[in-house]
Image 1: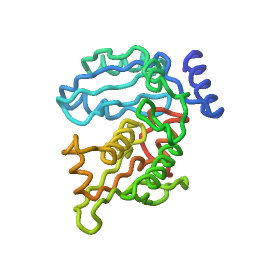
Image 2 (image 1 turned 135 degrees about the horizontal axis):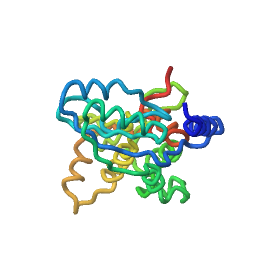
Image 3 (image 1 turned 45 degrees about the vertical axis):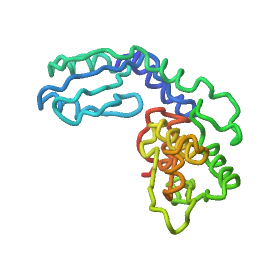
Amino acid sequence: MKIREFSLTFLAILAVVAGEPHRFDNYQVFRLTVEVESQLKALKSVSTGPNSYEFLAEPTRIGRDVEILVPPSLQSDFDSLVAKNKISKKLLVSNFQDLVDKERPNKFASKAAEDFGWEDYHSVETIHEWLYSLEEQYEEVTVIKGGTTFEGREILGVNINRNPGQNPGIFIEANIHAREWITSASATWIINKLLTATVDEPGIKGLADNINWYIFPLINIDGYQYSRDHYRLWRKTRST
């Protein structure tokens, strides 16, 4: 291992130990075209995780493009990989950290439940406080518990039911993959829309009046928290 590569890896380890979020400075994102089975097999064989490659679009089949995040320490390895397997590549992002920095422009704003909105990705605590505030505000809302995570966090959702015993049910769960933050934001947006729809929005109000909703905005809570605090691209749970 070259001295520069060792230094980058050592600094990344120190950041994790110190509790600082992993940074993606000069990590690049490439789109790869998979045309033959040998290319697919080569891409499936690479290691992924912190300080390694990450697939943003997985190698699943021939004919489907792959998007891969490449750390600077593995750039020469990556160039050799695509050259050896004659894989066509296109640079999409030259510095992935720029995207991470722009993702939460309002992260230092108020996080109180009464200020809940959709201009930031909220913490587990803020989302759960918001769910309980809805239970207090709306008669048709009940906070429900879907279990406990590996790290001991409660999995909370809401039941929206305006006609008990009459409406058919629909179940929605979000943030199964920890790094897909937009899913929990979408689920909370749906909850809010169902509860606030007026007669001027008959389609949405009809859904709220005639469906028994069970909505869990955060299923993979441990992974989601880890993706916020430590490694933005963490995807799985935190169980062993």
